[in-house]
Image (cartoon, rainbow, N blue to C red; front, side, top):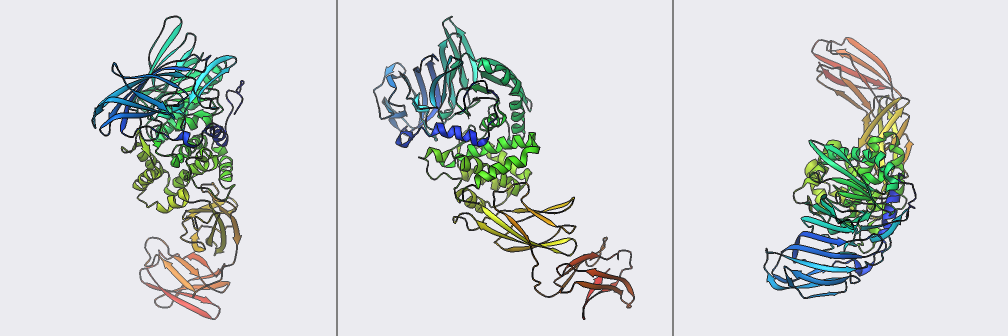
Length: 632
């Protein structure tokens, strides 16, 4: 945990963000994390009314749940930790029988609700939520002033309120009414639509009309300093609202423009900000990190990496939420990628060093899949190396492989998919959208990089072919046996002094040979110089490839059109070659002596000014010669 103090603008790395989050999530364990809520209802609305005094770790109030029956039923079950006391449950004015034990609230409706029908219950409850470390429901202080805040991801919502605490159901609407001591401000999701005070108690009413998962519902109460900005997104001017501790006000006010910049960038590249009809906001809290509460991210400070990461979750995590913590990367990997995308756009000079740190972290161990294979292990779900960094680099590699135009089109297609928008998604849904945008089969990519473990290690063997071409072999080893070969495009940069040419090849197997034109005779080869791939321990070796096959002369174009033809020579065992061009009467028109490098060279013949007809190219090497016909 980062000490609070006055370090309100301290910058975080992604590793620190994940580390702080893991500390919070690690407090949860075992069966206590399993939702017991009914699958027989679809929650339409939560209407919550709470009395909160930040000086006391205590909650009292009620929650109305409006639901639609998915099957004929006369009972529902909600998640609510048993340490809290359920006082009564009603539907309308009728009291209902209920049992509250083993963290489940089982409510007998007193009548049968038919499939498709709407009904509601209201639960009154109170108590001291379980002490759970750095999350769920926390009472602490800042500069001696009491504060209460919540953080429910992934399983903590039922620690402090009755709900369906799972990844199957989003409420269409949320209303939160907070009754708090005068002198405080109470914050929740969405827009503040009513506020009043009797001089002792202040009431603040918040409403959001966008679907919301239970773990994204939040509240915070203290003597917040509030300030409001606006951000223009397309033709919409949207509120940007901040509630911070008074002692941090100047730093938050000076740095909020950076979040506005990130909002506009993400809106442009990843589709409209998902909650345009409401707002985006920051709420300061005292935990060492951040939490992407819908429309209202909680942050410990205003550092750019942290705030852009939490902002990115509004698209990836809030609008589209992972349908299982097996796919935690759909939240955390995406937010990490977007935060790095923002930082690279703003600070391009830092790109390579930042990427080097991330790739180094990913490859610091030989195994580990992005897919979470043990969702009971909270440290594994929120593993910085795998869910955050490696997950983000799956997107980086897709961007590199598909190109920016296709990649960003695919990301926008995914986030606006009507089957997923404001709902839940799995990795297969993302793959489906990227395949539709690109027209490519991405099964190999996701099998190797999402399900598989490890990374490739490349050994490049290369040689000059003549003065402008190269021959090279791409050899690959992998760090983990689950993936024998990664089918990934490999960028190789050939250099000589100020000259540079990057060639991208897609090997089908380890040891595949390639020949390419680079336009000069390089002396240096770099593997993935921009760090677009996950790889490590790469090496380059200049070699002399054995000459295989018969000597070859290729002429293109032939017949000659409007450009002079190129003569490509290869597989010669000699160090030089004598080239002559004759017309059909045997007259010598052109004569050249060519030096061969590794048995190869290419040259052009200036023949486009010659009359049309048949010409003959004679290549003499040692005691041998070859003749080829050239048509003009």
